[in-house]
Length: 334
Image (cartoon, rainbow, N blue to C red; front, side, top):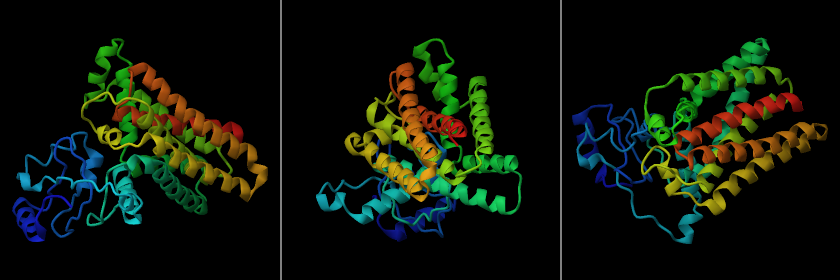
């Protein structure tokens, strides 16, 4: 854990500041394992990572330096790299970072290299959305309304994390001068092009999902999984354009040789399992798998060509546009 010397010291500080204390990593540092006492902290580092681009600064105005969690020196031994506890801590951190699911703050989390687990988180999101879709179907809700509620829940589950990036990316790409695009993308205010991009993305998802009548659970899991695999490919292949930012720690802790392969293998395994469940579905499953792969790679490459690299915003754009366009493709394949 970081440099907080015991629960007594932490309790005294938290009581003095109040129950809404937010912990964040020191500048340019990665937070590894976090243990927070639920009686003293309502908003954990999970919320801090998820809802702010300035993840390293927001706690500094309300806490003394002892509250800034400093990472321990990484254990590079082979036993550490293959430890199931390390994997579980990374997966927990990935779910915490990429979703708004209520993960207990006292659970161990390791935020290093969590991007490799983004496709797994996507499958989890797709599975939850599929459960909601089945529940609404059981209530005899019409397909269009059902699809709209599923898409709205999709945004809620991620806290709009990726949609915000897609909006900022659209605002930046709308600027004719390439040298000004990153500055526009960094502006917290949404421009007209960003709003239009959000409307188009959400509209495409809702209409396309309403047109998919079979294997909707697979459609949701595939879209969410391949979208996040595209992010992993972008992190692994292309340079990061900013010295700091909400996506910088992904690039700093990435392992390009293995990160994208893990997600690819997982998504291919899911597709193969669906095909085994009904071989008459081969066109839908094969087309979705091939289309998800192609869209994830092409969208990331196109953004790299336009900007000369990627940022946290473009990672989100890759996710959103891959999801939306893959759902559109599925309407043709079914």
